[in-house]
Length: 127
Image (cartoon, rainbow, N blue to C red):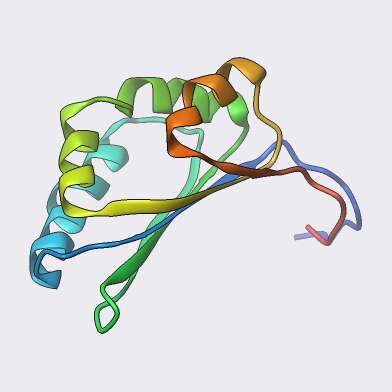
């Protein structure tokens, strides 16, 4: 794969960070048996990466979502926000910080305002 310097991609990266009070095994079961399989089954080619990481000692976690572009995230997010799976996630995992890396539409910024996202635009790098 050829490296490029300071070439902006259309990808959008979303980091959801938070904590949980349920038993780690309960959250891991939800992630492995419900949350990830749902996103896997969506047949959405716009999902580049969807991965969970947990610190079981601190009871914290991070979900990394990378989408080809804002349009794909908006389409998928529009289906998921407020859905039963999102409601269940919020019962098991308290989202404390949302970081959005990349450009998104003003309409989508308004729609996700309840997540109190920190938004950062691309400046430069190697990709």
